[in-house]
Length: 404
Image 1 (tube, rainbow, N blue to C red):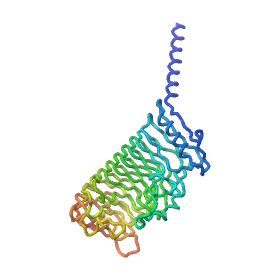
Image 2 (cartoon, rainbow, N blue to C red):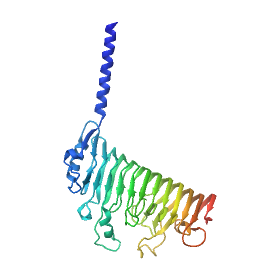
Image 3 (cartoon, rainbow, N blue to C red):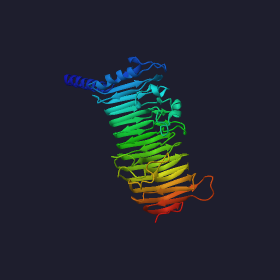
Image 4 (cartoon, helix red, strand yellow):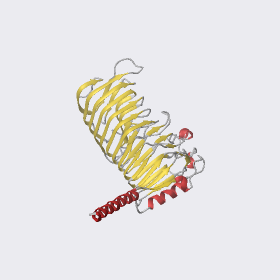
C-alpha cells in the first residue's frame, strides 16, 4: 500500500513539474531595449538599436517575443519594423519615444512603421512624441510645391490580427496613426493629442482596411479625429471622445480613379465636443470613380457646440478654386444611412446638412430621434438643409426635417 502511495506521489510531482515547465516555455522572451544598446538620454538616435532588437525578436523560432521599452526618453529617427515574423510579437512601451524636431531628419513617410506582420500587440503607458510644433508652419503644400514631406507618427501596412492599447500619441507632424490594408485590428484606450489649429494632424486614418474596432479612445487634434478612406469595410467605433478636431469623416471620396466602396460602418456612444463637424461624409464633385457608400449606422451621439453636427457634403472643395468645379456632380452613391438618437447643440443654425449629388441622389437615409438645438451667435432655432435625398423620419425631430 505504501508503495502505491509513493508511486502516486511521484506521479503527481512529475505532473506538476511538467505543468511548471510548460508555463515557463509559454512565457515570452523579453528583449529590453536598454540591454541591447539603447540610451534613454533624449538625444542618441536609437533607430539602429531598436531595429536590431526587432530582428532578434521577429526571427525567434520558439515561443512569443516581447520587446520592452522602459521609462525614459528614447530619441528615434525614422524606423521600420518589417515582418513576417516567426512568432507573435508584443511591443510594450512605458517610456517616451521622441521624434526629431526637424522634419527633414525623418527620411520616411512614417516615423515608426510596422509592415507585413501578423499577431502584433502594442501597449503600455508610454508616449509617442512627434515634436510637431516646428513642422506645422511648413504644412502648406496646397499653395507651396516645395513644401517638405512631413511624416505620420505611426503606421501599419499589411498588418493583421493585431491590436494597440493605452498608448498616447502627442503632437504628430502630420497624422498620428495611419492604417493601410490592415484587417482584424483592435484599437482601445489610446489618447491622441495635438492643438486644434495644427494642420493635417488626423488622429486615426485608414484606407483599404476591414474589421477594425476602435473603442474607449480620446482624440483631440487639428483635423479629422478619424478619417475613413476608400476600400474600408466593417468598421466599429464606440465610446470615443472627439474634440477638438473635424469629427469622424468618411472621405473625401471620389477624387481618384480606382477607389473602392466604403460600407458597414457603425459609430455609437460617442461624444463630439467643440469640433468643426461631427458626423461627416464628403465627396468631390465630378468624381473620377463611381463607388458606393452604404450601410452606415450612427447611434447615441452627443454633440457639444459642434459647428456642423450632421454633414453630408457632396460638393467638397477645401481650397477653391477647385479643378472639379463646373465639371458636374459627384458620382459617389450614398445609401442606407441610419442616424438615431443624435442630440446636443450646434454652433451653426444649419445643424443638419444633407447636400447630396444631383446625378446620384442619396437613398434610404433614416433620421430617428434627432434633437440638435442652435447654440451659436445667430438668432433663431436650428435648421436643416436637404438636396437630392430620399429618406424617412421617426420620433422627435429638431430641427424640423426637410425630407420629402
